[in-house]
Image (tube, rainbow, N blue to C red; front, top):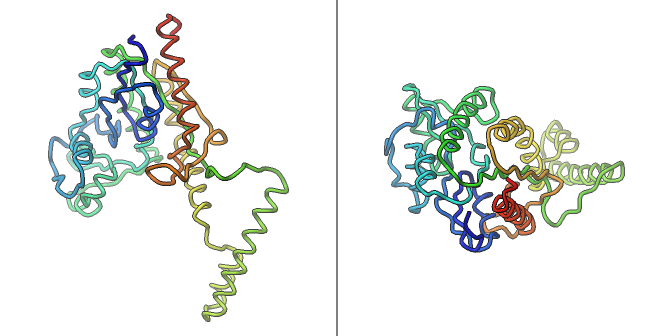
Length: 296
């Protein structure tokens, strides 16, 4: 193991792992393999089957083309890193299955190439994340990937297992009857405002009643709902991953985390505060030191 001042870090995951690297001392990240579901390793669609011309950057093109080739294992082994960070966030969008038995990750890059239009024309079918079919395929793909990696790699494997944050960084969590009552009052007040607007605009009474008792969710409520759904869906995935990764398991629950309004990628349940990334980086460094001392 080399000194942490010269740490070679590879990532098989998402911006969660990549952004954590910014808080590791003098970490050099190579490679960063993202937007690639473990499922594509069962049977990738093949090199450059579709054009990347619609993509804006070399990085986006590299991720899209890498997904078509399922190149993660080859790239990670070739790099011979000291540490390999793994997270599951980029599984969240599901995969496309094609009639020839091949798979393509439903990544943001694929979306930008128009996959929602051209994949169905070629007989493609979207398998949503969280479905039993997706979990079955992912389990097989993840087990294959980890088996190949762990048979040949000497790096310290770190599974970064974070819940999605349900609250934004300017919110103090509250529980109990008072907190519930406060949320209910704010929702009722929002419903009244919406219903009064409906009256002014001459809406049908059914619309008025709906908006009074079921007012539209705020942006924060939508983010919180998205996080809660994801945390339920990810539960069996992270449990399976933990059972297949022979390495360090860094776990954070949603109450420990916050969405950051200052994150460079915008506010989302998987874009965390600097303090969250720092705590994870500190745990990684401690694990490196333990491995150097023969305790891992």
